Length: 64
Image (cartoon, rainbow, N blue to C red; front, side, top):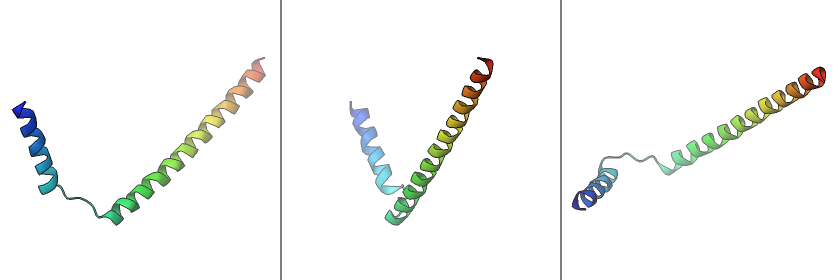
């Protein structure tokens, strides 16, 4: 158990002393960029899915 608590203590020390944290404004800017690209990617995926649905419906209507 001592090894585990030592590991946790060293991990917190590493996060406090050696990690360079971004400024809050940069975090906000990057979060907005990720959100916008996520929405765009979701819309593109939806569009491709709808395209395949229409293509398969047309195919099955032809062979019916």
